[in-house]
Each structure stands twice: as C-alpha cells, then as structure tokens.
Image (cartoon, rainbow, N blue to C red; front, side, top):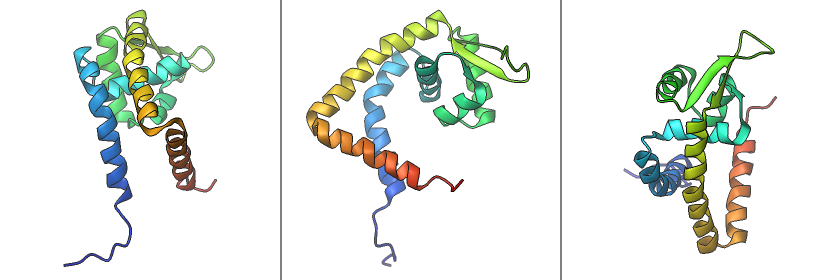
Length: 145
C-alpha cells in the first residue's frame, strides 16, 4: 500500500540526526556515569549557573515528574544541589556542585572538539545554515502568543 505522504518524515529525520550526533557524545557521558538527561541538566547549569527547576525542565526537555527523579539522583551523586530561591521561597533552584562543574568542564572539551570536526566536515557556512534552519523550524512551530 502506498502512503499519501508527499514529504519525508521530518520528526524521524530530526531524531535520526540527534542520535547520530549523540553517538559521539554518549561514550564520554557513560564513562562519567551520566545519562543523556543528566548531561542536559548539567549543560543547562553550565550555561546559566543557578537555575529555577522549571527553567531546567524547559531547557533540558525533561518533563517535571522525570526531572524530580533525575535531580534526586544527581543530588545523591554530588553533582548538583537544590535550594529554595532566596527571592521566592516557593521556587526551587538548582546549581552544579564543584564536582558537577568539573564534569561540565571535562566533557565540554570533547563535545566542542566534535562540533569543530562537524564544522570542518560540513563547512562553517553549512553548519551555520543548519543552525539557522533549525532555529527557524523551532520558531515556526511555536504556538502563537
């Protein structure tokens, strides 16, 4: 049976591209005992410092109930610490511990080296176009505000 689809399966292609990129990163993550989700949390904290848990969930693409478990394991392992937001005691903020920050620093070298290889392989212009196209697709698919 022939399907009525005229276009390629974009969600599948995006997932396949993600998995191709992550195939280079996962061995380093696993060597440090990190899951993909834990790395995404550490990356957010490495980029922004002290972050409210809702923002961590949004930027790391982890649903709230899952984030609770991920953060509990990371806190147990000494990678992050949670505390009440001094400006709003109803909110919880998260920050990397020195151990977590050191992991971000170590892993960032390998990840940046992979991005440099991608840039060399694709060319700076094509990689820039890829980033621009992905940003445009993300913006296009955002709900109207």
